[in-house]
Structures are given as structure tokens and as C-alpha cells.
Image 1: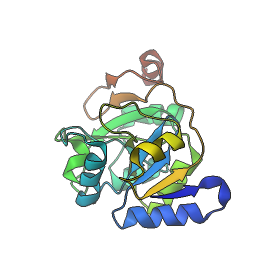
Image 2: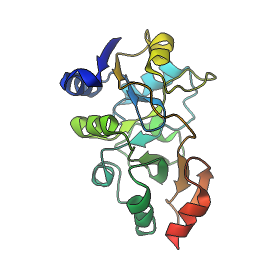
Image 3: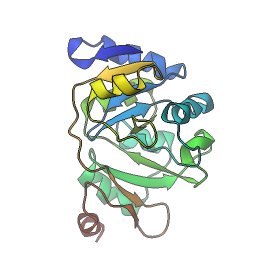
Amino acid sequence: MKRLRVDEGEHWLLEAADVIRVGGIAAIPTDTLYGLAADPCQDAAVARIFAVKDRSAERALPLIAADAAQIEECVGPIPRLALRLVERFWPGPLTLLLPAPPRLAAGVSGGTGTVGVRVPAHAAARRLCAACGTPLTATSANRSGEPPSADPDVVARTLGDRIDVLVDAGPTTGGPPSTIVDVSGTSPRLVRAGAIAWEDVQRYLE
């Protein structure tokens, strides 16, 4: 594993993007915890994510993106009912479930037919998505059954022999996971409570 420090110049961005483009796995910071980033359109890369985590392939992988425009270009249109949520809560810890397009690796949706997407409130994560030209996976950087981490040193110690690159931006803020709202149907549905209260989500949908 190569460790790339964000505060030591811009080389980290090109190096990490190059690794991901060829099917590699990078641990990256987000606005909550460190996540595992890979190209969600490459089957082999997505399979590696599950192997790194010792995780069942039936569980879907969330995606992060540079901005809403990248999500619409690569995943599909954001429903009108969800646009107010996008305007209010992105960048931030709100994940929206959208129909999964055929171009995504099958393992990303975990057989659900949907994919969770969000724009994180972390500049390094957004810049890496932009450099790769695609949303990236962002499942937590830990082995299944172990706690996720906001500390890059913990990620290096526990997953260093399983990943290709660690993008080190120092400790992240941690805290609750993102709130997940399914907007793939006719009305929004809370899937997982998290950092943004469901009452606040409902208020902006009215």
C-alpha cells in the first residue's frame, strides 16, 4: 500500500486517480469516515471491494460523486421530488437511492435494482471523483464485523495489506452515518436514519 498525504502537494490526486482507473482500491476520506473507493463500473474492482472487506456480495455499495451533475451523467436523472433535498443537503451526509443503471457492476446494487449516491462534504473526496470522471464506491474502510474508522492510521494498520493506496487527509469528523432516503419510487421513503433527521428531510419535501 502506498500512502498519499493530501497536505504534501497535488501529486496525490493524479496518483490515486490512476490507481482507481486501472481497477485498484483506494482508502479515502469522506465527511464521515474513511471509505473504500473503486470504479463502480469495473466488475473486478467491485469484487475486490467485497474481498477486502470479507463481506457478502449481497450487500449493496454506496457511491459518492463530485457533484449532482456527475451523478446525473453517470447514474441517471435525480427525480424532481428529490431536487429540493439535493439543494439543501448536498454536499453532506444524505444518500439518495436511485435506479441502478446497467453500466454499473452488478455487485454495486447487491441485487436491489437501486444504488445509493451522495455528494460528500469533503473536498478531497469530491476532487478525486472529478479526477476519475465517475462516482466512486465509498463503503466504509473496515473488514466486515469490525468498526469503521475515522483515523487513517487505523485504516493503514487493518487494511494496508489489502488495498493499493491510502489517501491520508488526517482524521475525519466521524459521527453518525449518512441518512438514506429511497427516491426511486413515487414517494420518498426512509431507509436508514442517520446524520440528517428524517423530520428535516420531510420538511424540505413539503
